Length: 77
Image: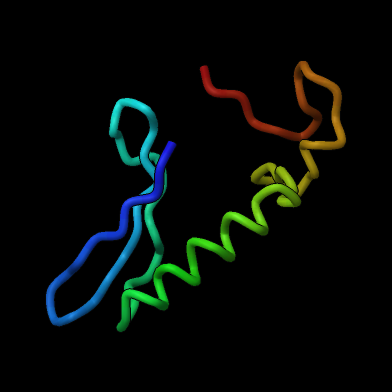
């Protein structure tokens, strides 16, 4: 995976996280006024993601459950 910094219109910047095939799997929710700001945002994301919790739509912490059906979570059919 790799982060790609993207120049936008009017001197704005954003980022994408791309998989090995080059497909964007995540994008910045905002654009930044300077390239250095987007670089700092990427570094903050890289530091914080290792400790990120996994949460379900109901607010249940999914990282505390064993694999298998999750209580109170909707399943797609």
